[in-house]
Length: 454
Ligand code: GDP
Ligand code: GDP
Image (cartoon, rainbow, N blue to C red):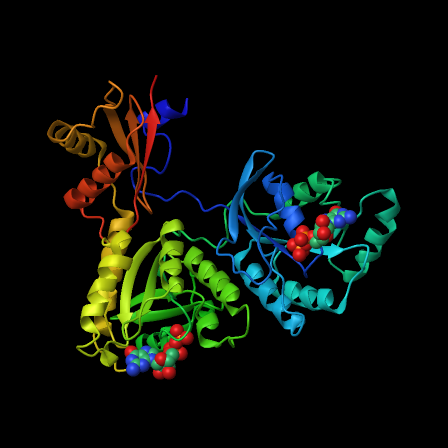
C-alpha cells in the first residue's frame, strides 16, 4: 500500500532529488457559448455548471487536476467568462493564445450547429502557428441528426472532427481518448527541468515595474532562448546572464508586449500570470512600494504559493518611498504579508537599478530551499524533540501521536506525518513554524500532510 511505499522511500523523488515529472497540460479553447465550460465540467466530473461565475467577474483559477483512463493531466479551462461584445474577436484570440501557450495539446471546441465562424477561423490560425497537437470537438451534436454538421468541420483542416454532446456526454469518451493520445506523458513545458538554467518569472499587477526590471537586468546581454542549445524552444522566454550565470526569464514576450488595459484585462493578466508561474521554478512578485497593496497583489502571491513555486518579494519603486509612507508600509507588511514571512524581501528600484543586484542572491536562497531535502533520520529526531517539548493537546480524552515522518518530495518540500489521529490545524502550523525555524526553507512554500494510521 501507498503508506508503506512511502515509508520505504518508494514514492516521490529519488535520493538525488530528481523532481516528479510535471503533468501534461490540456487546454480547452473556443469562442464563447460553444460549450467549453460544459465540456470541462464533464471532464472533471462536476455535476453543476461552473456558471455561478457571473459575467465579467474575474476567475483566478484556470487549471484543474483531471484524470481519464487512469492518466492524470492538468486541464486548463478558459470558459465561463463572457467577453465584451465589442472587441470580441481580439479577446477570444488573446484568450486562446495564452491557453495555447500553456498547453501541451489543445481541445478546440466549435459549435457544430452554427458551423465555423470567422472567429473560429482566427483561432485555427493561432493553433496552426503554435504547432501544438489539436483535437477538434464538434460540440452540440446531441443526436445522430447532427453528425452531418460535425462532418462539415473537416473543412477547418484540423483533422477529424469528434462529434460530441458536452451536455449529454455523447462522444466525450472518444474525444478524450484522442486528446490523451495527443498529450505527451510528461509536460513539454518542463517546469521542473533537472538540468539547464533556472527558470524565473517576473509577476505582479500591471504597472508595477515588470518590464522596467526586465530591461534593467537584461541589459545588453539579451538572447532569445530559442537560439540557445539545450534550453526550451519557447520564444517567449529569454536567456539572461546575471553575473555570468544564465537564467531563463519565462514569458517575457507577455511583459514586453504591453497588453492594453481594457475591461476584463484582469482576467487575462491573471491567466498570463498563471502561465508564467507554472513555467517557472521561482517567481519574483513585484509590489509597488509607493502605493498601498491591492487585492490583486495578494492574489498573485497566492497563485505562486498554490503552484508550489519558490517566491521572492520585490518592493519596487523604492526611489519614490518617502518617510511618511514608511509606517504604512511596515503595517502593510505585518498585515498582508503575514502568510509569507518566509519569503525573502528585497527593496529595489527598477528605474535607477538601485539594489537590483540583491535579486539574484534572493532567487538563489529561495531555490535552494525549494530543492532542499531533510534526511528522514534528522526529520524524525527533530519531531521527537518537538513532540517531547510540546505534545499535541488532548482532545476528547485522546492525544494524537506522531509516529513517523518523511519528506515525500522536493520542489517544493512536502512532508508526510503518520499519526494516530488528526492533528489540530494550530498544531500543524506549529510543526511548520518549527520546521522553518530549524531547517530554514526561506523562500519556499512547504506542505505537511497527515496520514492517520489504524
Ligand atoms: P462556453 O461559453 O464555451 O463555456 O459555453 P457553455 O459551456 O457556457 O455553454 C453555452 C451554452 O451551450 C449553454 O447554454 C449550454 O447549456 C449549451 N451547451 C453546451 N454544450 C451543449 C451540447 O452539447 N448540446 C447542447 N444542446 N447545448 C450545449
Ligand atoms: P509593468 O506593467 O509591470 O511592466 O510596469 P512598467 O515596467 O511598464 O512600469 C510602469 C511605470 O512605472 C513606468 O512608467 C515605469 O517607468 C515606472 N517605474 C517602474 N519601475 C520604477 C521604479 O523603480 N521607480 C519609479 N519611480 N518608477 C518606476
